[in-house]
Image 1 (cartoon, one colour):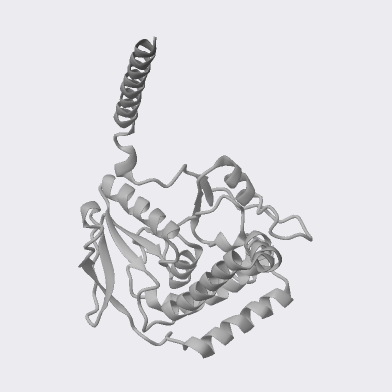
Image 2 (cartoon, rainbow, N blue to C red; image 1 turned 90 degrees about the vertical axis):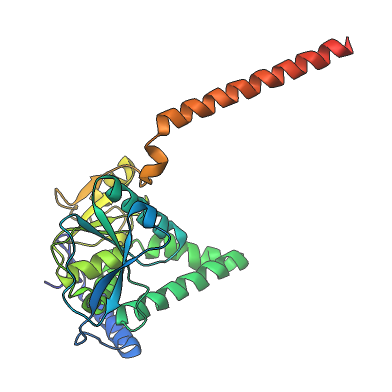
Length: 295
């Protein structure tokens, strides 16, 4: 199935499809084609996230990685702290529920076409972001329209789907039935193209954008308004009414927050409220003392 031609039952125009194919070919020539390369993984300790049971997936020469039955792969791309924060929240929640989270950063394997492609796009995005902060005219005429409308188009998702075909070889030898939660569409798309069968695409943004679609995965959002916008693929094609996302492909799951931050939230809030009340009482007492002295 060519996921760049038909997206949730909505046909992509021949023009946009051919553009996506040309873009993929350009990147293939620039970064290489490793579809004939065999990548193998091993589990290694994650020094930073060890307290929540996270292990890294790292490359090795030895095939035959066996993951435990309770394993969950957290796919991310190390593209800004926001995506990493969500990845940590997913890993934290998985650990609290008795799962073993395995950290898969697709931007950490320089030998692979996937990492070269992701790093290139990350560099372009970073450059655009810096320029937008420096030049108001660039922000108004280029950067803001790209982020609010350019990434929103269904045709943009077609391009990403073709690019994801170049990322898939990196994941080919991982166990395909392992639950896989991605905190960006690219690792979700790469997993789908690699043959993973239990993929969750944790959408980070509330503004509906085709950039964040990964057909074949279960999509999650954080608010009811985001659910409605993504369900209807709102604004993703200005010329036609699109078919909605099918039943069972999209869920409003609430905010992505670390288990450690919310597990004791009631007691924490009560303690803060009590502290505020005591501070307010002391402030009133000092104010009364100063007033009495003045009199």
